[in-house]
Length: 325
Image 1 (spheres, rainbow, N blue to C red):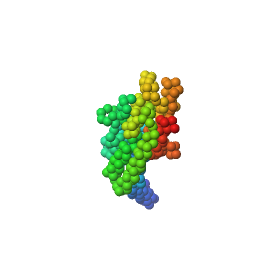
Image 2: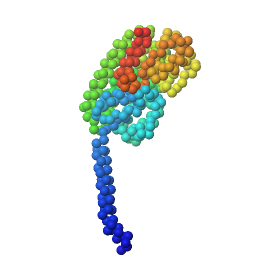
Image 3: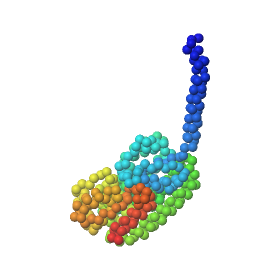
């Protein structure tokens, strides 16, 4: 037997087994901790837009973790995901997204998660979607055509979507208390019923001859359909903010506004200055621009940090903007 071997058995025999035992103990502890973590992991729902995120949180309550990908005051047409957020999608028990082409930079990630086996729910596609209308024809249309993704401007459609989200949570998110989720949904849909009635009473202050809407892009078609308004046109003649108006588009809109006697334009709160500059240049300074929260909630305390507050703020601003009060 060699000296090295002897040294190994005498001088190292106590240290090596102890070191090996420590490693094995650490591995066992890690495995145990990992097992406990997996067993104790809370169910997860991931939501793309912050509007749907707020509604989903009201329904889920404390039954699961709800992660919202879109930040406050962001544009749903253009926001993107980090690598971490993309991974969160595939690890979710359920993904709630708007669909109908709204989340233009996120849809491929939702599709990939669905293909990998994650349950997904497109709220807009389940809320009796309308198609975009031709400017000035009085409102959106059902049936064929490019679908309008902005269904949330109609509180009755949001109420339907809320009930369907509850169904999806109960069906696909293991570990939730179905009775608690249903109770949350019932409470919240009752609030949406009250919201719809209040919006109707408030918008009734606008006389028939003044019920014409011009916006920064086509976003309030569902509201117009629900409460009897006409959509005259939009500065960006598209359902997405990623499009750009041409000079002929602006001239056509100006003529349509003059014909309808429209002097108030509703702009998203994140970009009213640009809209004001464009339209005021075209109309010689005869346009009043009123800010609305059209496609995103704000940060906490900024006026539209929940869906209910956003809709109430928009309704009040719209009624005052169209009546001059």
